[in-house]
Length: 132
Image (cartoon, rainbow, N blue to C red; front, side, top):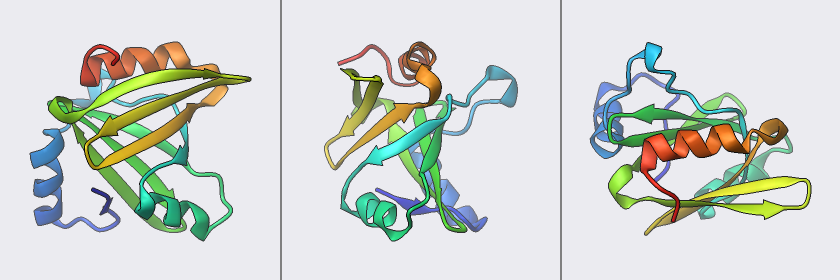
């Protein structure tokens, strides 16, 4: 499920946090390395095709999972992920790796910036548990 999180709507944030859990305190180093969003479900694909800008994203760790954030033009979108529903893994590719995150209704593929695969694996391990 994809959410437009551009505006500070408390009801929307309550729903997002109900899925992913509340954000961790800032001193817990809750952000992921910078990621390029390369694939996702239909609603993300249509947003990726809406502009030719490179889609950079990041994940914020929460008490029960993580939230994927990315921008398209001036809008901020988020996809909350619950630890209980997610599987993840790393696919080695020529020139780097692709990290995939999957749940029943969605799969997203991300490419770490500058080969930060080990940092990203540690982040996913903390957020979602062991690789699938």
